[in-house]
Length: 433
Image (cartoon, rainbow, N blue to C red; front, top):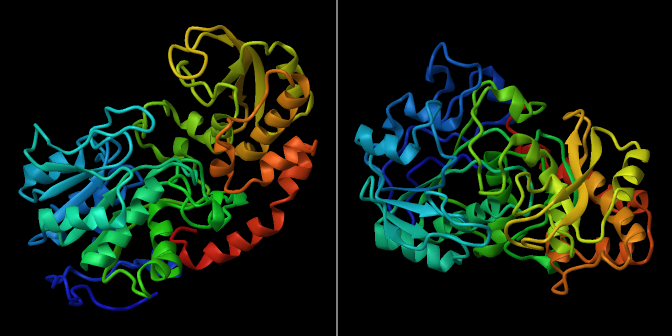
């Protein structure tokens, strides 16, 4: 990684120095390495795990003093006492000059595919800019309008490539390259652990749910992804340039094997249809049902856990249970979604129950569900005509293999080599062991 100091001048911005660069070498993290904020100073005596936001808050946000800070965040950007970081910064006198809202919005009021637009936050009086779907040029214009010289990212994701917060971060980083702004990631745990699974995105299928070639479940935190993006992808999109300053404030006490239930942190739904940590564990797989004619469970009390459609019956659960898939059990289930697919219509299907959180492979599980549903219910199962499944999985391969009658094992086996390559490629950017 680069060793350029904070405050390196650019043509468009000259930045006052921060403390020192926190692109922490992975091997040094557990040996007392420090960056923008020293985890050793954070919330002494509290829970063993301390988020990047709490690390910085424990220092009174002093490392951001004198900066014109814009915060890209949503309702998950909270401290251990559930105070939102923008509210906490404002109360402490470290008031940001702007906030930026991703999909669902800065305060989280919008459903899937929506945002809150531009407005003034009534609580803090801070201008809020709509970052969802914005291009790098549009975001750069927002930075300039607000006078932002430092962008702070603090959003809890769920560990799936097609969760749009990852790509909002990438575009925000690209806009920071174009304006010379510093970029700071307040890191948070990956709620579904540090293992990588699934197919690699084919660059020809780049969309807002997957801009760069990472696998469907990369097993990385936002800070780790930011390191990868800065090194591997930003130069190709910015004429060879990288961020003038990238700072990661790591999570104290975090280990890769942790799931969200191990962290002791409160679950704040990162989007309206992500009610629990168990939902997040299944989401990298069962979200693929968005690309089918079956309901992925939106409009039910357990989206991405309850999957179904009119015409599906008890046989689906029976066949899936007979397969003995690790970590899950299927219950015959009937729902009437209140919105989205099949609103106000009775749907048969399954609820996916987790029996062992550490054994489940959500993507392989969902592939087995798709292959079995297509075979049992050929008049019910189908793909969305816009080939949304290709955008979600990063290529046409899954769809064409399923249509050709491939087994679940054959589909999953098709991405084995590229997955192993990705696991090796991500290694230099990992912060937690």
